[in-house]
Length: 274
Image (cartoon, rainbow, N blue to C red; front, side):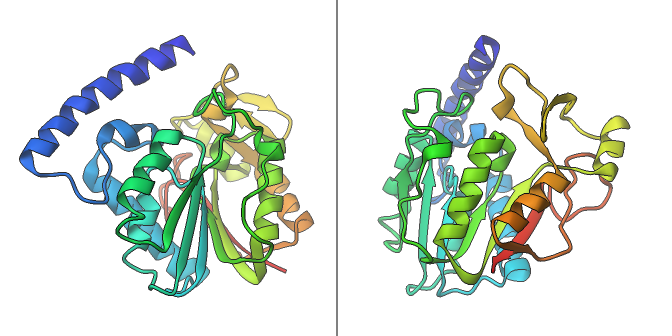
């Protein structure tokens, strides 16, 4: 844990210097946060940050049929990478709500996105996470999304359940089903373990060492399991069935395990509420 903290501190200092040069050179995009904020979300390159948001907007439209005037919820909004892309697609009649557990990420979104796009709002969920928010006061398994039943047309999560333990993840899926309208969709990314993914992992195709088994999930870091979590695909499929979410097959498998051909890095499941 100490080594992780020191590594992050050094990286944050390095990116702070890069932020200063970006500011001087006028390279700060109005909806791209400073690097020292978004590197913990897995990005260090400004072009990649924007490209990934645009790519997922395409998935939301093509795979889940997202329309410009719909009500959208993002669970784990981070530094607004997806929200920034959605500002160029949702109409003034559309609504975006996002929440995250990292205070500085939410604060940046509130300060830089909402004033320009008032139909985009962001909330802080003060939830404990050993990796991302160790000072959190609530548990994810007990957190009730602050939204009405059946309010949203589309709910999405990117790289959230890859950092959540089963009890927390199962509760979130239940909450997603609660806030979705009947017949509406959700889009969620995972690291899914099936025979093919395991074979690629054994062949050394994955940067993650998912060898530590913990029931229905595997972690690459037993001391801090939330750092990266992979779930057995059968477990996730059954959980969707129990929660009344119909998976829209095929599942779009990602390249994380070393697949030579894939749509994205993580595995993508689109489903609709019965």
